[in-house]
Length: 454
Image: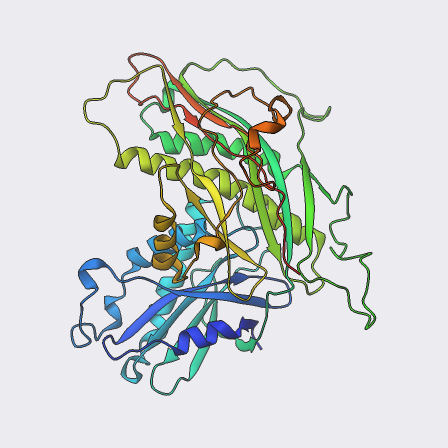
């Protein structure tokens, strides 16, 4: 028997609510978490139609060849930015009319491999040998409501479909555990003259890859303690009168310690590199990961948090560069310094779950734009009161050396008590005559004391 997928009941209801009267098929993404024993699906979201296809009728969209691979992968890339640590795009679903049932598996296989390939390119981390490499495809017949669940091994491009078990469970993620940490970022990325022709985004990603090794090799203290990787995360927790460990809305505070120097058995060699500029990332970043409550291992929880640290820093840089390209001023001359504000993080709860999604907001973006983005990309209605601002921009202070203890307590008298602001700066220096545009950016962030309802 293949893998088992435990699915939130709300996902099943979401899939059944689609009406295929106007279109022959509807496709989308399945979001959840992998584990060694079983996988969990906590959310499903349809892929929004292209504007030019929004009014396409059923008669003109009768073939699965019309499935837009590029559009689906673009949607998956956008959605992956909105997932905290521990969550990922697990696979693809498609709802079709009965006459398209014969060709659906080939289309699903093509999409699931294309999505995984696209997501892998943007990551600062790679799958390990212990990672589950199966990705799920789900076919739902719009007439009979019959489902067909299959998995593919994305490590093997020639893998064939394997049957999988699809079971619904109510309140699947209401007792999932969260891990929170605030990590200080101080990354210097030199822009070598030999790579001056590369896009700024590629140069920055290469520099972040070196920093990622520090994060991967760091030590993680959970509630102030060092725990063995193979131990259960909930080991030593109090049990209820029924003998079960109480896990509802439980969170762990994590501190990250990174190595400053190489160990004595490694030799280091100083090199001189001619550079045309540099990128500096400085500040504090709030990170969060979620893990299932079914005897989770410490190593799995720490790995989820590591990947959130890497993803959130990388995603912010990527979003900034995209914004600069869209808003580039024609005829603008290179300057020695430029300051830009990186987007800050916002968390939004999944209804009926202890898990929260996230997004990134620039200072000039309105709440309505955030709500529209959640509706378009995740098909989720978000109320204003649902927005949890984990990091708030302090636009009045652009001092990269400012520390939290340097700020007087009365600075935040008009702010909620659970929010603390810390300025963060991203700066790009560029010498005159270099082709790459100079960018100096500010990553303004802080950390908050998050609270969770019982």
